[in-house]
Length: 221
Image 1: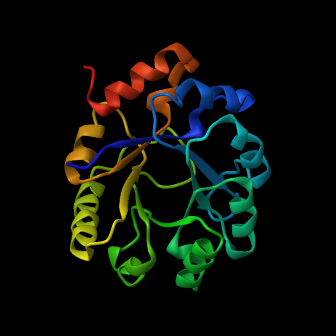
Image 2 (image 1 turned 120 degrees about the vertical axis):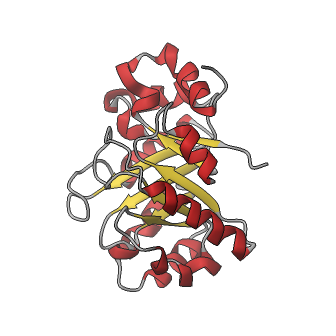
Image 3 (image 1 turned 135 degrees about the vertical axis):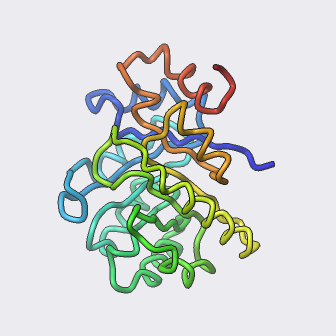
């Protein structure tokens, strides 16, 4: 039985108090998800390595950094030095994505690849030997609070089968529209990690964050 992990997305947290938001959830979660967007690869801008560096002292939890940027390679070292533990990239973001993944491993981070809703699973099959994590996006990347795309459930199952056939210790992460109603579907399809933003940080009531996370885990109704 795989242990379900929760990675809260700070994209939905209060940007004026990100350190405090991390402290409010750290007792209930397994890692912290940080979405880096450049306004070029995706239509939004969030934050970069300097912000992650400032947040690093707030917790010992792993930093799960999703790079929605292009180009990538020249920034990998900066994110590693800032405190990233996992760096996840998109195959469309660099024409030599295997080399990008090698660079991530060389700087001491775990290497992840992300599949957009329109990205074929075939693109990542040659990358399996170097991967530590596969992220399936169940919304189009760029903004939080989007509606879950149910057709991606099959992709999650297909990725789960690909990982199991590889016999490698690769984590399957799912991000986008995760809520109390969609989480059970994603878990049943084979996810190891749920990324959730609005379902945790909605309304900005820190006293409810722990309860919200337990609901996602299926521990409370």
